[in-house]
Length: 73
Image 1 (tube, rainbow, N blue to C red):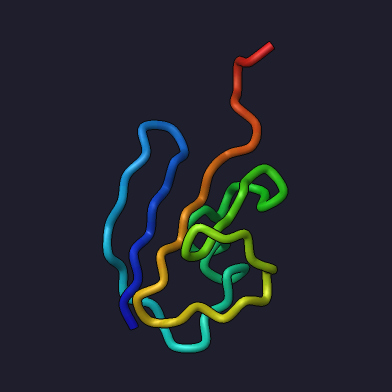
Image 2 (image 1 turned 120 degrees about the vertical axis):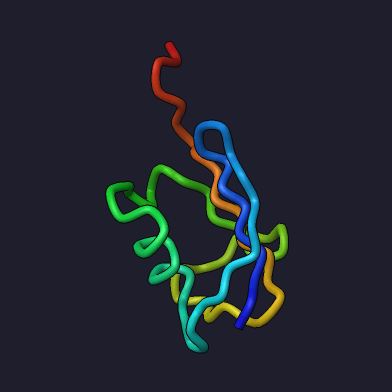
């Protein structure tokens, strides 16, 4: 299935991706950001915060935004 992925970390980018049916938000995060901690990010689907076990649907819009910015005082 296809969804829109918006990564607001660093320079940020957006792109359409194909993911396997039944993929949860937690699985998606681990796949796209394997060296990051989900606690440090706000993950939204269709502009709404979702639980980690939310199953992604075709045409969802997934946004991952850091809640901590390195170098900030």
